[in-house]
Length: 335
Image (cartoon, rainbow, N blue to C red; front, side):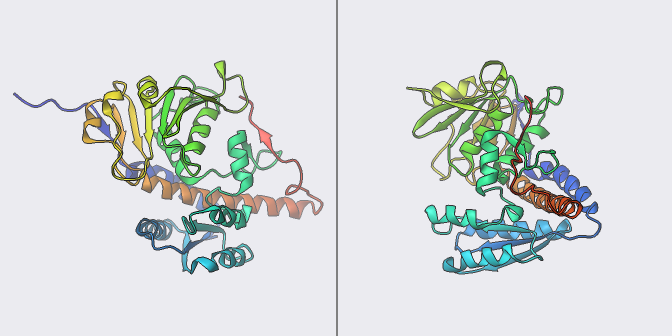
């Protein structure tokens, strides 16, 4: 008797990244020969960071971008960033964290110029993300930049048609219930906020408990709100969800597939394998890693900040009294 074939479809990040890179190439062609230059700043001995740097360089060079890696001591990172901010030959700055593994890293994130922040980690971009503000100017021409890994997950969900393009922009996850395992400030919490801002009901699970991110009943609220779920754990949250996204560091954690809703979509953004092989027996779609999509999104962000800077320079040329950088330039999308 033949063994049953799992109905789960495994989707590799490389296949998803191809479409994003084609989009990036089209945008690059519109720059009329300009080759955006990304500076990577590496000051740690983390093997994963070096692999990420190598992937980034290869992807940049294969897709028409210039990449330079600066290997520096920890104490020289701040000066390296400031010099790059003032260097017209550098379009984007990518710092490979962690460096100090404390609040000093947050300070370094703020050192990066808004116009060169390819990772979307400076305060303005983080503020816009949480407030559900999608543009930098009142004319809705310069789009805000989102952190690479959360945005990569969103692009994967779009690729998988979890986002519904029939619904209005900003509401396209309405009707979906999503579990995000890991509420780190770098990826987990921003991802939960972004998904909720797009209309999903999101259960954010961490060792400290469960929080629910929503825009209220009927998506009546402009941005997400957070509700504590007392006495809840992943056992209560995960079975309610049609999408489960994990990002737990460390090789000891494995998601309990017994908690999976039949036919759920499963995505892992951790460098470790959070899902055991049994996930294929219950999931309808499984994305085991997202690294190549993250790098494609990085180039997309680099293209965007280059375009934004050109738009701002053009606006400044047209009107020397243009106050875009200092005016009230937030624009909130209607729900």
